[in-house]
Image (cartoon, rainbow, N blue to C red; front, side, top):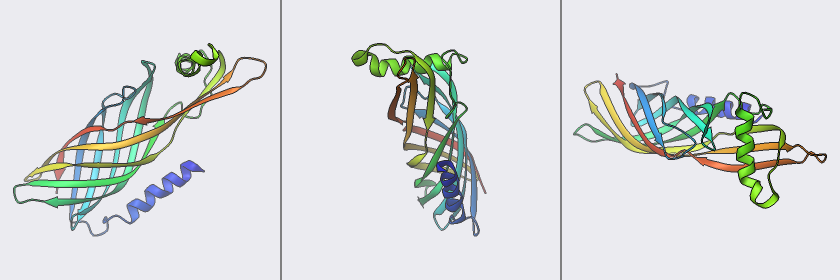
Length: 210
C-alpha cells in the first residue's frame, strides 16, 4: 500500500507540472558524490520540461550500496518533482527544485538467510554492531532490509551556452533504512534498527536543451 501511494504521488507531480505547455526541454547526465559512506558515487539521468521559469522533472540514477564496508549490490533512486529557476543575462541560471525520491533495492523486504550469497552475513554484522555491546553477540535465522522514499531538494547553478548546459548543485536527501533480524534462540525475538541514510552531496550535470 505504501509503494502504491508513493507511485500515485509521483504521477500527481507529473500531471501538475508544466508539461502540457512546455517551451523548453532538457536532458542531462547527472553524477552525484554522496557524503554517506554506505553509498558510492551515483550516475543517472534527468529530464526537465520548463515554461515561465517553472519546470517539472523526472530522474533516475544508480548508486553502489554497502553496509559495514561490504557491498550489498546497488540502489536505484527514482525521483519526480517541480522546480523554479531564474536566468541571468550571462547564461547562468539559478535553480531550486524539490520532489519525492523512491529507492529500489533488489533485496528490499526479502528474507535473507545467514548465507544467502553473503548478503545475510553482512546484515548480521550490521545488527551485531548495533546490539552486541549491550546484549552480547547474537545469531539470526533471517534478516529483512527495507528502504522507504522521502522528500529531497536541490539548489544549484546551470550554465547554458547555445543548446548545451552544465550544472552544479547540492542535493539534500535522507533515505530511511530499517534492518531487522530474527534471533536464533527459543524466544525468536526480532531486532530492528532504524536510521536515516544521509545521501546528500554535490551533484554535477551536463546535457542538451531545446
